[in-house]
Amino acid sequence: MKSRVLRMIGAAIALASSGTMLAAQGAPSGAMPPSGPVEVGVVAVELQEVPRIVTAPGRAVASQDVEVRPRVGGVIEEILYKPGQLLEVGDPLFKIDDASYVAAVATARANVATAEANLPVSQAAFERAQQLSGRGYTEAEVEAAQAAFAEAQATLDASKAALEYAETELSWTTMKSPISGRADVLTVSVGDLVTAGQSDALTTIVTSDPIYVDMMEASARILSVRKGIAEGTLKQNDVLEATLTLENGEVYRGTGQLVTPGNSVSTTTGTVTIRFEFDNPEHVIIPGMFVRGEIVLGTMQAYLVPQRAATRGNSGKLTAYIVGEDGTAKQVTIDDDGSYQNAWIVREGLSNGDQLIVDGLSAIRTGQEVKPVAVTIDENGISRDAPTAAAED
Image 1 (cartoon, rainbow, N blue to C red):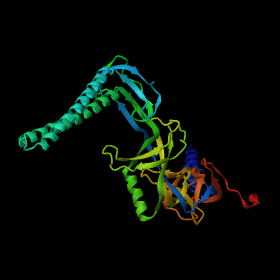
Image 2: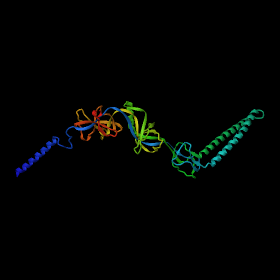
Image 3: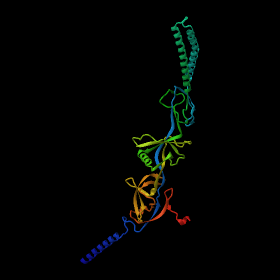
Image 4: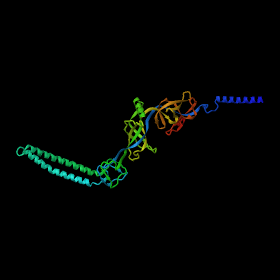
């Protein structure tokens, strides 16, 4: 019995020893890399001229936005436009009862006529007093005649000014559009009493062609761009242009031109507002709409690293694998400077001709022997085998 137990213990020890030896010799294990070279897809990175594009959120703003208020008081007699109508400068909007203003114009005209009639009489009296000065007219009487003539002249001038203002107020009873644009819904009805300069607008007119788009860019990135320009690593375009992607994912046709780069940083968001102007003849972009803008700042010398080939760690930096000189996978840390299409823009961490691993990343670790196979990345980020010389022939 005792010998049987000893044999069983010996067998267990032998089995455990053989398992340990197998593990040490490279038996399958999740923690161990696969034996032999692993086939991976690679692309050769080359330093090239890359557009420096900044993507920023934006919001559409009307190029003109006017709240229409009455300049004279009265009762609304007629509404002369339809909500949503496109208006030109001077198109009529509202008609205010003008009876009192017509009467004011008539009174002002009568005052002008009276002043015009009195002026020649005063002038003649003054001229006569001058001629007879010292011969029936004292110096005081001459001065009094001169003052009467000047007063008559001033009365005529004041009467003409009053007439002009009365006519202007009469013209204000027909409210007209001050700008070209689309009229909003109205807030009054026929018969409503309005007052001059009231706080409530009767309607709003918005010009959306052209239209502005305010894009918000982080001040830190702006500093980075300025540094690149100063150091010569970024060649700035003579004219800054932008493109838009609408809320439905559609790319807006046409480009926008820079209006102002912004002069202050928001204390709440840390961003600077950059305004661009876009032609909007079909009024596709509506004021208040949120969009995504891409600003082409210029060009720079950099490498394009397919986004599928790099991962971003907790530190914020990107890591990727290249094929080392000894034929093994080597992990490198790279700094990106934005993106272009489906690739990261990289200026440091790579060298010309480096074989960047883009396929088979899940099966490799640092030091793993690899067998590189040249591939290409299309515009959709999909890798395909690179054409061979035989295939090209």
